Each structure stands twice: as C-alpha cells, then as structure tokens.
Image (cartoon, rainbow, N blue to C red; front, side, top):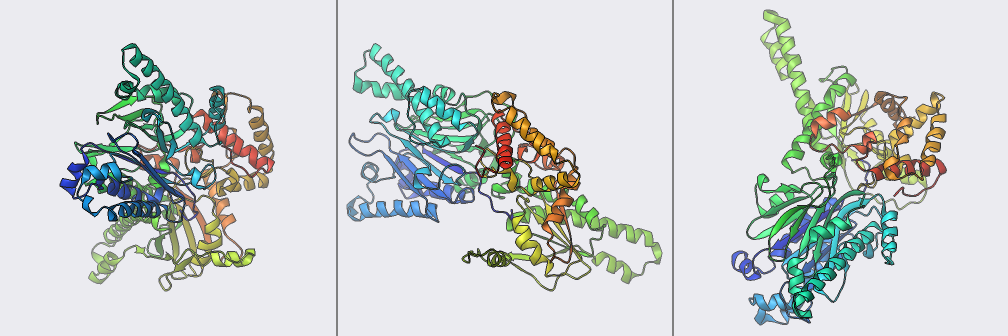
Length: 632
C-alpha cells in the first residue's frame, strides 16, 4: 500500500498450563512464557507501531506480594522498549540474588513479570491520542483478586457515545471518552455484579469471607459477564482479558470482522491475531491452530480448563478482506495463495490495457507488500504468453524454421525490480515545493530496462488516497520514459470509510470519492451531493437499524471504469509524458480470491453492522460541512 495508513492492532495471550519448574526443566528457563510473548508480539509488529504493552499474572503466591505486572511503551520501537524494561528489571533482581538463579519457586514469588498468564498488545492508534494512557493493556484495579481486570483488544466500536451514556446510567463516571475505557468499564461493572452474587451465595453456604474467594474464583461465569457486557457493542473486535485470580477470555465479534486464532496442547494455551505467528513461535502445524468462531469466547479457567462459549448470536461472516490483501503477514498459507490469486484475477484487465502486447511490457510492483500479488500476475502473464507462443507455432506449421521456433520459445514476460524504497525521508523543510521534491525521491528506480516502446505495469496492494502515486511514484516511473504506465490495484476502489479498525475515517481523503465528485461536476449532476447530505441529516435521529447508506448514490451514475479513468486523469500531472491508466480489482474477483473473508464495506458500502451505516453518513456530513473530524 503506497499510501501509508494505520490499521488494526494485534493481541497475544499465553497461558502456561504446567508449573514453572516444568518449563525450567524442559526448556532451560522459567522465563519461557516471557520469551514466547516477545516472539508473538514481535512477529505481529506489522499490526501496530504506535505502542505496545505487556501484562502478567502470578498464581498462588503469598498475600502482600505483587501478582500483577504491567509495562507499556509509546516510544518509537515500543516492543523492544518494553522487553528491554522487563529484562532490566529481571537482571537487576537476579544480580542481587545470585544464589537464586536456579530457584524457580523463589523467582516466581519475587521476580516481576514471571508468571503463569500473559497478555500482550501492539497498537495502531485509531481513537484517542497516542499517549501512554492510550496504550493497552488497560488495568482496572481492586483489592479483591477476582475483581482485578486487564483488557486489551483489536477493535473499534461505532457506538462509543452510546456505550459511554450507558455507563453513566449505571452510575459510573468514566475518566475519559474512548471506546477502550468504555469497554473496560462495562466488563468491569458486570464482573463486579457477578462476584457480588457469588459472594452472597458463598455466605448462604456458610463460607467465611476468606474462604469465599476460592468459591468465587471457581464458579465465576465469564460467559455471563461477557454476554451482559457486550449486549450493545457495535463494531469489530477481538477482545482479550485477564481476571486477577487467573481466569482469562478472548471474545470475537459476531461477524468475525477482526481475526482471532488459538492453539492448545498440554503445556500452553496461545491466542494471537495471526495464525502463522502461532505456527512459527510454537512450531506447530497449520491444522493445529484454530480460528475462534464469531460471537464466541475462548474461556480459560484458572484450573487450566478451556471451553468455547457462545456469547453473542453469530451473524453473517464478514471477516475483513483487507487482512488478506495487505494487513496480515503474507506467510500464512491461505493468505499467500489468496494474494497470488488477486494478481492473477486482475490480469485480464491488464492484458486489455496493454493490447495483449506482453513482449513489449515490463511488469513490477510497489511497495514490497505487493510482491505476492505480483507473483500471481507473473503466472498469469506466463500462461497467456505460452498460449500465444503455441498459437504462433501451430499457425506457422512446417514452414517455420528451427531458428524461428527457437525465437518463439525463448519469448518470456519481462519481470523487473523497478522501484526500490531507498529510505524514509524526513520532511524537514516547511514550504510545499521543497516537501514535494523530497517526497518525489522516496523511491529509486532501475534504469536501462524499460524502452520507450514499452508499457510499464506496476501492481500495488491498493490505492487509497493516491497522494504517493501522484507526488512520487508516477513521476519517478515516468523518468524511465515508458510509452504507458499502468498502475494496478489488487484491491477494488476504496469508496467508503472503515470504522472497525482501519484508520480510514474521512471520506474526502479517498481518491475514488474525489473522482466521483469530479464526474458529478462534469456531468451537471452535483445536485446529488446536496440530496445525499439532506437525506443523511434527515435520518440522524433514527435508530441505527433504520439508517440507510445514502452515500452510495454518489457513485450510482458512473461505472467502475469511468471512476478509474477519472482517477488516472487526476493522478497525471502536466509534467508526466507517458500515458497513465489505473486498473482496479473487481469486487467479484476479490470474493473469488478471498472466499472466506467477505468483509468489503470499504469497497461496496455494505456495512456488516448498523453502526457502520451511521458512520458513513456522518463521514459524508462532515465532508459536506467542512468539519475535519472523525465520524466515530
């Protein structure tokens, strides 16, 4: 994705099912859980670089001893920073207690972060400021173990304002307005109610106050807590939480928008946002890693017993397709093949654009994350060229000389590494012309491989704003003097804001939306903009279930090809000599390539939750009124 956008966070959870001495004996260290957490988080650093956090819980230690540890960072390399802090704390204690280096029982009691249950988070900020207070995990403290709550998640709620008002109705006074705080407080409130009810039951059974705690811990019903807490949540989420005494949970939204995978054997229970991360860190087969069902929670009791419980009624599966196109690491077996298919399925449009002239075309990719879809494109190009070569040989018959046959057989598509991102240049000069000149040099190009008679085909993951293409990439590619530059997006046109995790909240940022507006002006249909605004305003007081996405009407008068053509015109500046064409993946081919991840609201406007329809209308209202703010 040449236009950088912030997106979905990542979660990691590890529950050790054996005593720490077991891991010391088998793996050589009582820090086994911490080491695995580092790997899980580092291998998900693509999911968040604004902040990182880590929390651990110790089981069965003496009263008066700290049993919860937490560390967070919003520094430039937050994962490395938090584990450097952990390492420094551990080494500091051990240096003073050299005689305890092999005493696992002492380490468990006295070393911070050494524990039985761990929760980690890597963050891309889409709501709230990037202060340390915004970094997960969040902690809700209490003197009672079973009322301590730690929460981290990969989520956005579309109805944060409503959730805040519900907390106020419950008598609370939330300290800030973020969806993370409202979620934490909502779960915390019903956790307290559940604990209070169990305490009354314990008293009726004759338990002392002290003995009531084990009874509460054993009988705490996290399924019920989550059912009551999440009743009105509208959004995409993978929510993970730890209770102070040792229970844990991970809950996935009813549409399965946010990804969640888990693995369990007799030693550990592991949860992560990406499947290959678990495979790599724990060296397990793909079939051993399961996907958490939508609307269900993985519940891990302190005893180590795990269960999958239905919390919310599952709705139509609308897993985020951008996970497959770009956000998740491409090392997942399914994602790798899906990305190749995205390149393969868009190739017929490319072939039409270059007039079937594969021999006089150079194929490449920008940025590096588009490399896998590029491989799919190359396979399609090779297949087509092989068909063309076969046809030439068959049509020539016996009259073809051996030399000509050899020439035909030696023809092959030209795949080159055209653009290299040299460095992340810092824009330190204030005026616009200097800034644009710096941006235009972000990429270096390979000279000498493109001829003036060539088409230059470049595939990208997606085209969001088009800013980098216009100010940098197309200008750089034009230096190679190709006849035509064909920019290919392996994703369809992004037309609508996301509200479930990706930081695409402002509709006026999208190049497809800008192109549609230009087309409305050119065809004397700009009154549609005023009509859509009025319709959006008129339904503001309706409940979410009654809201319609009227923003679709902006695009209805035009075909996808017309919008793509207008985008190409907008991206080509006066100093570009080559012809420029922009090609987008079709929505049908996206679904064909990624059949299990059909979440496509940013392309189609078909939001999986009612709150999404409210968000898209609010985003349009903000655009129309000139309000530079988020729609959720």
